[in-house]
Length: 208
Image (tube, rainbow, N blue to C red; front, side, top):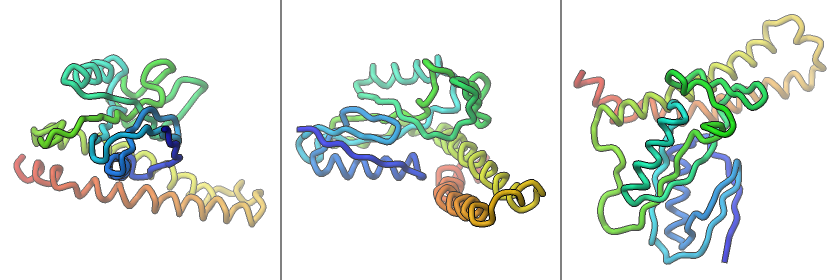
């Protein structure tokens, strides 16, 4: 028996991970996922557990190698999007990426910024990164993604406030745009602050 759910996560790492694990506790195993959809199949409650990895800063070949490495270790992986991109046709610029990781094309790393990693529960800790430096690097990459999203929203808000041409937009719609920008700033800003205050990140900074 299959079950389909639709979700968008502003907290695309921890929030999504917690939800997937709650679903697994209810006996729902993730079968596949789309841009906003998740398809589950029945399993024993708590049989599987999940981690969500951000790989959007990496080039497509490097992300593919990392995915293959995880699968060789016995994990099952699925790709997922976060929609924090700047697009020109099917070429997307990701300013928060590293090197060629700033460019995404289809097929490639286009809409594949996340890896959902599945492990059959065996009583052992499910930790993909144990090295403090590696954890800090991952946290910093996520923070960069959020930073660009917040800067983009601030730019939109500034345009409606300070650019004379914005006055040509009917007053009602101008306030709708402003309200939407402020709301999105809050929805993205809360998880962004949580990642910035991540204990792994702070511990690394203190030991540098």
